[in-house]
Length: 261
Image 1 (spheres, rainbow, N blue to C red):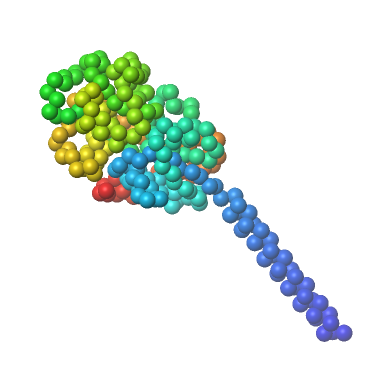
Image 2 (image 1 turned 180 degrees about the vertical axis):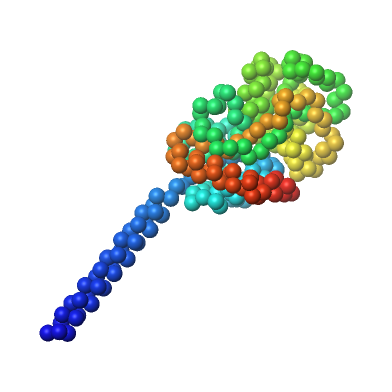
């Protein structure tokens, strides 16, 4: 009789242990289920964002990946032409985009995480084109300018009074920009940052000395951000912002910016 009671006691302890284990398992499964899955969109814009097979690399991509390592966010990266990436990031749930200029027109369209790159944008043309002389935005209107669709430069030039199909030609990527500049006599200048033009020229075997910066569009260095759609959980934005602050404070951010691609 005593043995039966002891067995029942043991059985109860086992059941109790199993029940606790089961509850912990449910909590763990629920935690996994609650893990945020975020899509990060960008464009192929070397050396900042580079498509390598089915992977995405580049300065700003490595910064985003590094800050993600300080969060519990599950991320996937996708590259599209800028216009498509921009429009998807505006409308899709749990979607972020980089690197993106923070303008007045865009301010209410996104949650702004933080600055991940600062650069300058210029009118860039062939050095051999001795007829170009620009001292103001107004001077530039007499030339044919190419810019990337829905990019900061595209919006900036439209706001400045440039007119598509008159003195503004819009393309989908930087590869097309340089191609137009080199192979088409009707394009005088492209609106782009010097680093992008330098990298693209090197990748297609054209000496960077062939190009010249004729005029800087932005009066001061332009900040580019990581931003997320308004349909992204605010807790995700807070995690990303804190992680970005952390990698800036510990120096990892600046170490990545000094990498060579």
